[in-house]
Amino acid sequence: MPPTTENGGSGGGGSELATRVEEAEWDEARDEGYDEFGDDWEDGSEEGSAWTDEDAQEGEYASDDGEEGGDPYEGDGGMDDDEEDSSDLATTDTDSTSGNEMRLPHLESQDVELLPAFAQRRARLAAAGKDVGAHLVSFSLSHDRRRDPPREGDCPHKLFFRIEGASSNCVRNAWRRAGFERTSKGGWNLWWGRPLKFPEHKKLNENQKVCHFPGTYYLGRKDNLARNVSKFRRSNGSASYPYLPVTYILPDDRARLLQDWRDRGERGLYIVKPKASARGQGIRLVAKPDVEIKKGASVLVQRYIDNPLLIDDRKFDMRVYVLVTSFDPLRVYVFKEGLARFCSEKYHGANGKVSHYKSKLKHLTNYSLNKKNAAVEEEGDGEGIKWSLSYLKERLASMGHDPRPIFERVDDLIVRTLLSVEDKINANMGMYVPHRGNCFELFGFDVMLDDALHPWLIEVNTSPSLATEWQLDKRIKNQLSVDMFNILGVCGYSRQALKARAEAPKKDTNFADRLRKQEVATGRRAPLSSLTEGDAELLRESDEEQALAGCFARVFPAPGSDRYLPLFASQRYSNVLLNAWQQTPRAQRPPLP
Image (cartoon, rainbow, N blue to C red; front, side, top):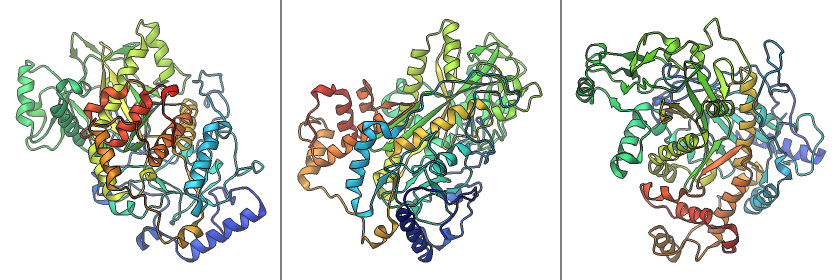
């Protein structure tokens, strides 16, 4: 029998013939032990566990059991994973604890299959993957293939997701509504959880997608993030990245830290963080680093932001959800909604001096800490310790602050942060990942505003929490999950046909084409002057992706983003091409071959 869904149903829809084909494919996959990753993956735990540097070969990652916020003072840990929460899709706009009406952000939900770009993408991907029967899958908040009548165009193939590590209901339910079933074996379509080991990427087929790029520990580890931003500033000038607090990596920078403390009159506060922790473990404020930080300690130390913007006398930070669908070319989307997380007690600070800095609930924006305060209960948006970014923007406007330039600077912060690591991640992609579309990643950028409205990057989470404890979480994160998977272009495929195929077709380029690309990348040829079929495929892919972005907004490439091109470590043909296409008015674009 084919595998069943976790609630006991067989999942899927369609005709009796399609069902028999699906079952035959699964039976053969089962009998053959279809597993791209070898015997050691066959018995992998479906529930997953925490992973570390040794497991991932990608820096030290620790599982985070909680909600937003792993750094108890100023943000989350690098891996901010969820427990499997018991909540499901929000169906009402009422407070789950009191039943009273509550204000929730309005997010547009649409049937993506009705959009022209979806039909165009489905036809293009079907033609490209005709040897394996590639079929584009849609994701929805309303249509559920488990119980709704079959629709014309439903995928005829079995669809599987695999989880190794923690996950959340909003992700799993998005898959189940689309007809996916959970598996612990190979042949899956979507992978969620721990990062793959580098060699594991090599066995991916072109229709498999995994939720991490190889090497995003360059962002998720606090020390790696600081090093990469420092290198970016050295290459492009100190003004090229004004968003990271002054940072010291100990023990190497201990002398510089102590000199900075003396230069500030031995008065400034510092925040001490383990280099690769999560859930706020080991975070503390210190006033005297010479005695409060042991010699030889291996930690990261930053100047504490002691002049935060306060609302109702409380400190807050912002969780901004960022989706990267490709690093070559770089394509970056920001979700139009997010969360503001507040301290549960009022902040004490005046004239640049912080008092009561040992009192965690006054200074820590970490949600999983503040929710334990006895005075905290779930409240409507704009009340309590968790707000939507939409309501935060309204409140900022009521205080006389125009939110538009604030969040434009946040977008700038996001793009520049990704530029600081794109060369390293692309190097890993070139060595280990066989297909450009295999990887995607949802990041959680934690950002704090100071009283001058300047955004500061606290850290980047490579597995942001998608737990849905509150109705506010459900409204935001269910929509985010559906829109994310629709952007990606997930395809079902015939596993029988894939096994029968000797190898995936390779697209080779001749010397003349490589020379053309080099001339474009170095500015010696106009990017849109001699487009090839490969160029047309890339440009159509990008246009379709943007048209199907739902509540995500693309921030790179975007109008005016050509200013970022000089900041890339090297000029890649795909970035120059896509940026030129983006900056050219639609009516003036050349026809695609």
